[in-house]
Length: 384
Image (cartoon, rainbow, N blue to C red):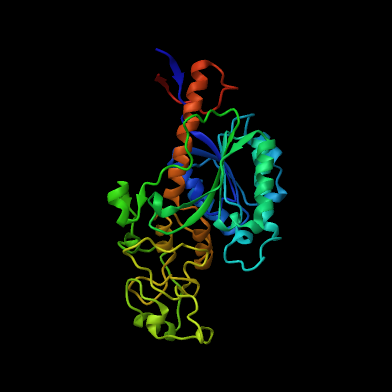
C-alpha cells in the first residue's frame, strides 16, 4: 500500500471578478480563493460581503483597482510560492467583443486588450490551469488578431491551450439560455491524458431526452416562487401608468409587446425587437440575463404574470445565486453585477471537472515523488 497526500483545496485567483459568480462557483467546488481583482466599487463591495465571509472564503484579498495598475509579478510574489497557484479564473470585460456591436464597432475597443492583461497574470502566477470566459462575439473574424495574440503568448509561456468552445448554460443545469465562450489552458507539465474538453452536457432539449438519456433543460419557474421576505434585492423598476397598463394587457407566460397593442414611434414600419417588453415564459429556460436584466425596455424581462419587470433577486436566482447573496449599490448596480456574472452552477460544474484532473496530477506526483515543491494546503492521508 502506498500512502499519498491528498490536496484538500485548490488555490484559485479570480480576475475581473465582478460580484463573485465565478468565485462562488469555485468555493462550492471545494476551492480556496486567494485573491480577486475587480474595478467596479459596488461589485467589489458585493464580493467582500458575500465571498469574504467565514462560511465561504474569509481570507480572500480583494483588490478594488484597475487591473492595468497592478503588478502581476508583485501580487504573485506576495501571495504565492512558485508553482503554488492551481487555477486562474476570469472574464475580461466583453463590451468590445459583444455581438450587439454592428459593422466594425468594437474592433479597436481598448477593452479587447484586457485579455492580454489577463495573460500577464498567467505568466506571473504560473497556474497549473486557467479558465477564461467571454462572449461569443470574441470569436468573430473582426477580433481574430486579439485571440491569435493570446494563443501566441500562451504557447510562448509554456501552456497548452484548448480551442475556444461556445457553451450554453442551460446544457449544464442552469435555467437560462446563455451562450459563453470558455478558453482552457494547462501548464505543459500537467498530464492531461484522457482528458476531454469541454465536459459532456448534463441537460438537453426535452424533445431529445429519449435519444440522449440526459435530463431536460430546467425551466425558470422556481425563480418566481417562494420569494424571501424583506429582501433588499427583491425590488423591481418603478414603471409609469401607461407601461403598467401595457403589461396588464400582455398575455401571461411568454406574451410579447406586440400582444399588448403598445406601439412606439420606433416600431412604426417594422416589428422592432420582438423580445423588448416581453414576458418571461416560466415553463422554459429564461432568456440571457444581461446587465440590463431588470429593465423591460432592454429585453424579455417582464415578470411572467405580474405587471412589472423582474426583481434583482429573481434575476439572481436565474443566474443560480443563493438567496443569501446580497448585491450592493441599488437596483441598477445589482442588475449590472448579476448580468455580468458567470452562472454559479455552470461555473461550479466546469471547475469541478478541471479540479478532478488537477487533483489526479497531484496524487500522481506524490506517488512517484516528482512534486516540484510542497504546497501549503495539504489534506489528510488517504490510501491509494
